[in-house]
Length: 169
Image 1 (spheres, rainbow, N blue to C red):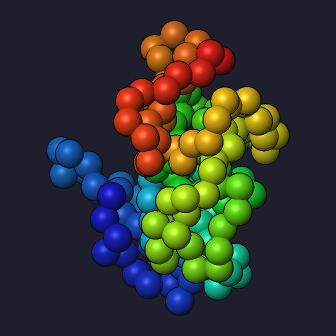
Image 2: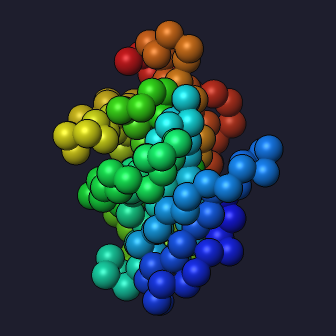
């Protein structure tokens, strides 16, 4: 990805997709600044977060097609306030994300503001928008999420803890 596309105002920007073999792909438009991304396992979808004035400069999660002639289509706000790098997408439809229980105004500018805020873990259906909470034991500030190849176990690391945590799906 290259954030060297056209600026489309203070709360929108064009992001260019750069091919490893010098392909010239279509661009996508993102509705804010502070772009963070997570690709689906096959690379067909791009989960991304941005912040803007409309949402008090808190991160918001979006999904968009990111493959072939469909690049940039089906762009959809998921109504989840978290950063895309706190998520994993084992397939084209579902995302698993750590979502802070509360966020201060401006957290998109300074993600460290949420380093002491516990996360809830959600499975998000990016087609229907349905969010299902996955129970966690204890207090966790999720850093990175990995889904096992058989999609039966979710592993995550925490910002304020050592080791690897796991949750059966």
